[in-house]
Length: 106
Image 1: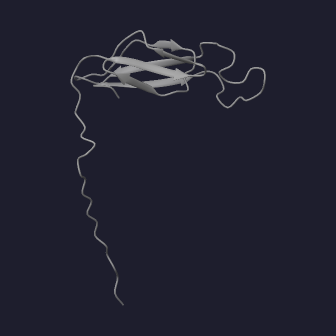
Image 2: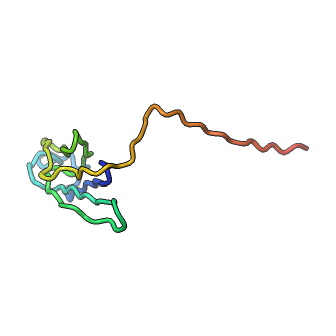
Image 3: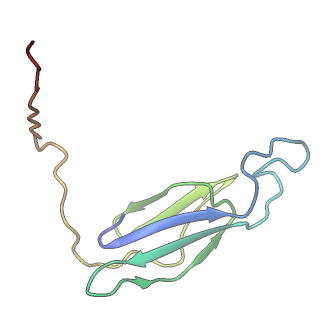
């Protein structure tokens, strides 16, 4: 999730294939896709789909630049994230959790 966009990666190649030759990531084929969905506003919309060499990967950002890497390739996607403000998350915010324990007495 970057700002108000959700990024999803897929791959048509068998990521569990470890046979040589032809193990996943060794053939250099562009079998992956990165999809983004903008959830800002009243109705979500599908953004640009980008073809990548390996889709079995995570997506990261640096500023508005979006990067994906798998197989033997890492690349910056052709489209940047939208510059709209998402909800800020404070990783240092303390969370409190209260639970009640119900014990049955005899």
